[in-house]
Amino acid sequence: MKKLTRAATVVALSAAALFAASQEANASIMYENNNYGGGSYGADNSTWMGSFDNKTSSVKNFGYYVTWWQDVNYGGAGFGSANDYSALGWYVPFLGSWNDNISSFHRG
Image (cartoon, rainbow, N blue to C red; front, side):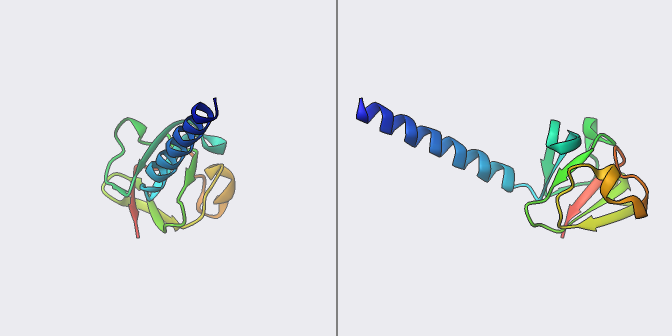
């Protein structure tokens, strides 16, 4: 029984480490809903976010500095930060609401 418990623990810890590493491999992960909920889209750079275009409501950056743009191909107004935002509409009011308003982004 101890061997089974130990094996299950090793598998669980390995899976958790792989999940964390895969999440942090992206410079930024955008979420469809506030508080990092709903569907997600992650990458280092994206000139166009496909079906996730203009759907971002919250974002995690894992300490990377990322710049987001309102238009595809890094066009339009831009906003850069290394911070996480649980609700983009609330945290950047001086630039207008960025909720559902991101079409491209770039790390660095």
